[in-house]
Amino acid sequence: MNKQDLAAKVAASTGATQAEAQRTLDATLVAIVSEVAGGGEVNLAGFGKFTVAHRKAREGRNPATGATIQIAASKAPKFSALGAFKKAVKGS
Image (cartoon, rainbow, N blue to C red):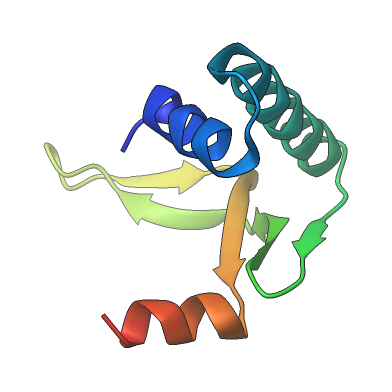
């Protein structure tokens, strides 16, 4: 399912037009990205939590040469599914 398919399902279940559902979905995603990019978290009860994962600097290996390299510290988005979502997936 892609974003357009998701907007169509939201429109069908809410009675909104597909264009309205698409704008709502876009605004929701922008809000989530903005909050997480700013270092915050978004917790959607029964669904999941969007946070920032902080990765420490570490040593790695160049797979082509085998040389040791330094990998810089980084941040990455992280999603953790919560109870009801996990149960729904396990049940299928």
